[in-house]
View 1 (tube, one colour):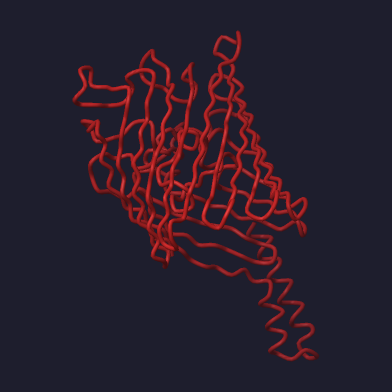
View 2: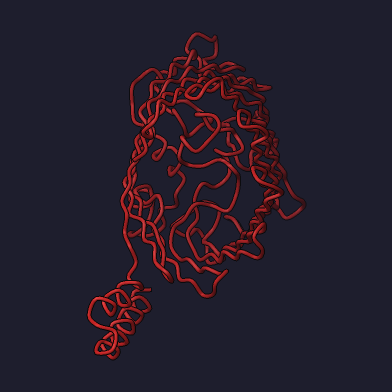
Length: 371
């Protein structure tokens, strides 16, 4: 990528010098500068307190990556970023830390001496892209996943806590992607990546992913995404989902998503499947105050994605209610209560006879600032 960038810059400067006598120095400098990418900087911080009624003994909350520490003040996510924007080149470098980062990157492979979560978790995104044509970009590096509709950045989502379908599908990928603006309403994306949310490799195979975003009309976007790749043990994993994000009125916003996945069994005799879905809504009560809610379910009978640590599979439903206060200048105060109910005693609960309960309730309050 640096060779392309340097060649473009050198070509622009050479052209400017050739026409310098006729154009004059000021105009020649503008021609040369027009092709130089601009760099802008930003930052984000998400500080929270989560009270979990189960009061887990080691403070770690299960089955989530967001607000993952119980009954303590902590940083969910903090990052600094540099964004590159040019006529032919773009990119982003974002460095991050926080409890959500530790939770989400805990499964990052550590095969060999030079990879693994100790490095990967600090890289939220690190990619460069080149504009091949007016409608096609090719990017390479680490970037947000093609799957799902919920963002890694909490302030971008309807609810503060993440749904189960978001937490148990990839937030990030490492590889190469092509983004094609087929029509003003349709954007298509093709990814070739290392695998299912891993920067370091687990095998010699590569995975592919696609995404289609169609703007039905102003405020309504329909999405379809797909993943196919070989996981540990040579088992083929396929995953697909559909989502819709709709600004129905100036005060009401809805989001719906349904995911379905399959993976070959270890003995090759068949496939195991899982599924989940979510419906979230935001109602603006005033210019600076909004009410949010979510309903969700997740089923993983063979523990393909969610390992419970015992014989009981993960089958759960849940919901959340929250209040957002947004006074301006990128600041948000978000408070939310979330309840989950499972078919088995899966949630840590120090007051329960066996140390676990079928239900979990958490109250989270967070300050977020984006600059």
